[in-house]
Image (cartoon, rainbow over all chains, first blue to last red; front, side, top):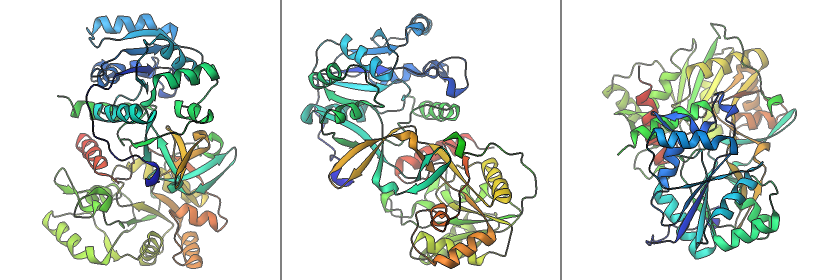
Length: 236
Length: 236
């Protein structure tokens, strides 16, 4: 696996980059009435923290939301005087569809970071590093080793597999803007679980960069507590 | 996958159970000079927290340590007046060997929980639930869904796989005492990454119980920070 992971790069300033932040889910797995990206963390919506992590980039931030959530989001921004500049576009029926909507809304740029709305714990330095690698090599995605043993499950059976053969993929997944636009234009909105899978299905080789353990996808209620503890602890 | 996971059980008291806590690693991945199970969390060794989580069980606690760490551990216990009763035994060249050493040191009991020393964040209620299921069904292990996309990696290539086919396996892994002893006696110390894999290789069907996101294996330095934040926040 070390062979497949890029070494840390020298960070240069002024990577010309934009971001597409994708909020899809209805939050039903969390067991709460409101979608998880809006759930409060230390009194502010989770999504505020995610957008703030991207506030240092020099391009645009596009936030893709389900159509039915846009008014609610605008109200939240106003209520909390949220001040990270971004544009909101309406998402689609699948993650791929939503990402494509976000990409189409961007002004042309050099590289674009595509990020899950419910990953508020990513560090700005990881974002920067990924954008740098994508600028040099065409794409970059963050991965972490599977530290737990793993089992492959089917309807009524499960079996052990070798965890050393696997890595877990996070976001932001960063791509040359023209490349990823061409890929989405070619595939339409076929459902892929992430953008690297889509790119790969089209024959593109993917560059892996070491991710961050704490860059979790907030999926279950306990994740929200964890995110809250970390975000409170790292407050400036 | 839901088909393969047991529903929550009614917790009854007085599950006759013991625990084997296995500390193997040299801690080199953490980049620190001392093994990670001894690293300080809020001023006390990580391993104290792990043992404390098992202090409510009604059997023995066996701690398996590398031979060269035993004096250091005894000093730590004395310095900090650590008061969770346990017995220390010397481990072997592999995890399997160490677990077997721990099992052999136990007095016979109904069920045994085999736990990684570097998982201090497991909850006592999960431990209890696993012991209960193992008492009823012969074994039980905690698993959590893979929430990230996954890639299978080889020397110079990686490819996307379907994460919904996989679960991540945590500890404690709980077994009927006589069953697991028989299995270890049959396999000697063949290297398996966990006890469920060993049991399964011997034809035993494994019962999956929903685990806990925060029950991470402290592997990298950032995990230690995370563990510290959670343990401090959950202090009584």
